[in-house]
Image 1 (tube, rainbow, N blue to C red):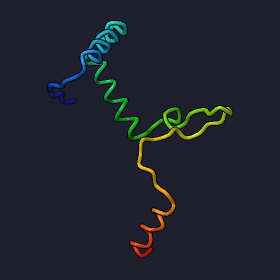
Image 2 (cartoon, rainbow, N blue to C red):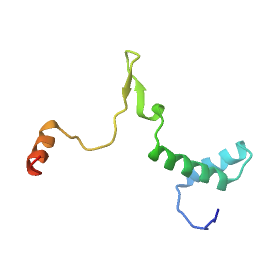
Image 3 (cartoon, helix red, strand yellow):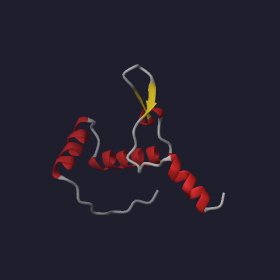
Image 4 (cartoon, one colour):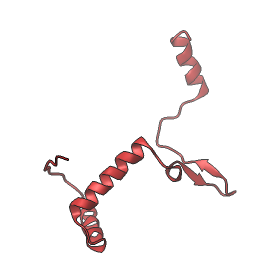
Length: 85
């Protein structure tokens, strides 16, 4: 595997937390950052059920709210008409 050096700017508090975690886990800052990036990329490609669902007040699993624009059935029907479908 080829490695490339790069420079990134991070908030000081985030860097300090990552360094503290590296000490606690007896590993390197590089390993912590690489693991975090790989986990984030994997989540984006294959989210686990724990990341998609939450338990509501009735102890039922429900989809977590996502930060996405609201899409209504009216918007869908309008788009279907525009596309002549």
